[in-house]
Length: 78
Image 1 (tube, rainbow, N blue to C red):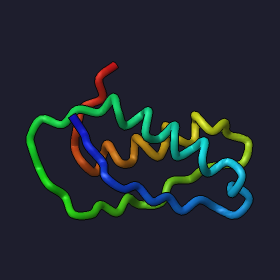
Image 2: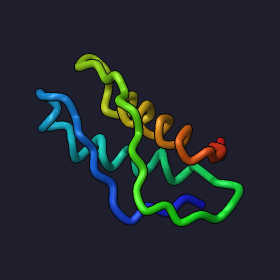
Image 3: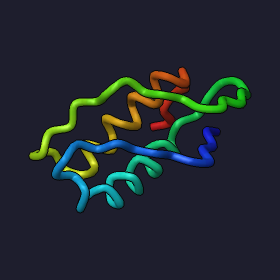
């Protein structure tokens, strides 16, 4: 199970009105991530993710969650 106490997203200009929705959806996507070992990570910085204005909030959230997934090395529970 992946537990995140605090999540801060920096979205591109023009996404301000979509930030709450994207953050909620990122949380939902991350709920499906399971890690094979226990670790306490003080902070995690994920490389930039290209998000395009035409993408849905869910598509943007999925890209962000996948980038986080790659950093923690977990497996997604489909």
